Length: 124
Image 1 (tube, rainbow, N blue to C red):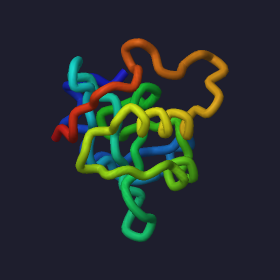
Image 2: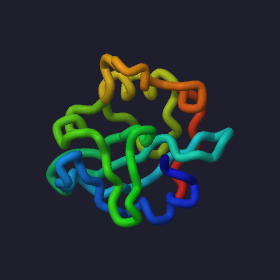
Image 3: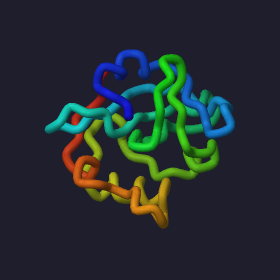
């Protein structure tokens, strides 16, 4: 689990896919407005790859150097895009969750601690 104390190190760090390949650079972390816990990150895939992609942090890991994502570069590239200068609204969060985990067989979709809700803007 990624903690609020990790945020400062995550911003600017490389984001890696499950194979250890770089899929981009973390540009910001969004936290839950009530708990202060990190819930989402934006990842910039590179100069010619388009805009930043939102990724949920509930299944990501932080090894103190890299944000380890359970998602492929294609999933990031094909993800829904939203304005990165605003908080994600519940409908946007739901679209993103369905994109990254369209059929959660293990019941790991949103939990009460991770349910769509108000999220603050970036924390650096």
